Image (cartoon, rainbow, N blue to C red; front, side):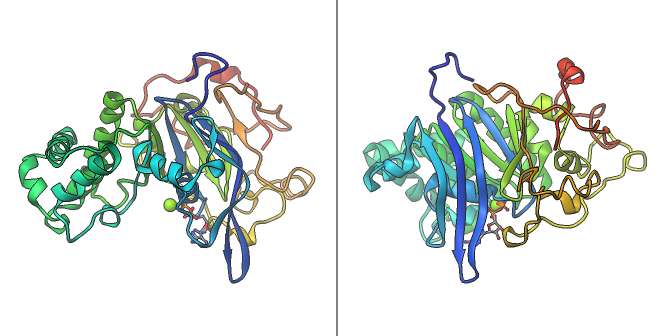
Length: 366
Ligand code: ADP
Ligand code: MG
């Protein structure tokens, strides 16, 4: 969180729009997204598959590929517009100041090099370390990510490790350069549930220890709550709701966020009393977005003539709360929003206290 008004966010997306240019034409994957991540803060980006979460992470890494492009807005890292940086400056920032952990650890590991060799490359390349120093730091990081017997892991090849061990190695590799910002794109989705729990715990503890800022991408709100201070909910290329974990979990306002809560299994809940309710339908493709609110066709609160009116906006309106440096801008309601029976207000195993101010906050138009 900023100490003073003049504080500079570590990462700022300023009305960012990203498109892929494919044979069929332009696919607007991300439209008009703004968010700020402050030094030391952990921000979750949540939403179903296809909402544009990875596209944002790739854009920050400047890895959008040939088809992807920034078509509007800016990405600022430590106050500098990344589009204005030279190739050499970008190269230095990537890896050294910003690192990324992907869903599939093998995509980040070279199958033909031992773990020790590939880890040692990071301090050699980014910090000019000697081979001896680099190997010693690599070994230490393997111990830091709770891998037993770091010497054995250093000598092993990626295929000799389990999926959970590979992902710990990738996290160690990302942290070796001591980055200011770590992007985690569904880092545990490919792992077994018990292994996943260990890796999530590790990420939360490393964050405390190294003070690294995190942009944690997941489709799982429960995981985001364990690791993050704030959350931004994405639907079909836009942020539809954002706020602190406590606010959004105590009182999800956007129908899409409430729909996501309905899909989370709660360990303490009786599944007959609180059955899981999937959101009907699927995320609309960028090329098939409806008029008005993009969530309209799947929304139980849909009102014809209002939610599908272009005048309301051609987009889903964002509900932002407690965004540092921007006052709450929830609009007055045109109709009260009923609390979904499935909204996990009483049974929240991840955090204890609901925000007492929540009950008095105005409900937004959506
Ligand atoms: P998420 O990470 O939330 O699942 P993505 O960022 O991967 O979402 O995708 C957002 C949208 O962009 C989807 O409609 C997806 O099909 C499209 N998309 C992603 N990558 C490409 C690409 N390389 N070329 C064309 N379209 C893409
Ligand atoms: Mg993704």
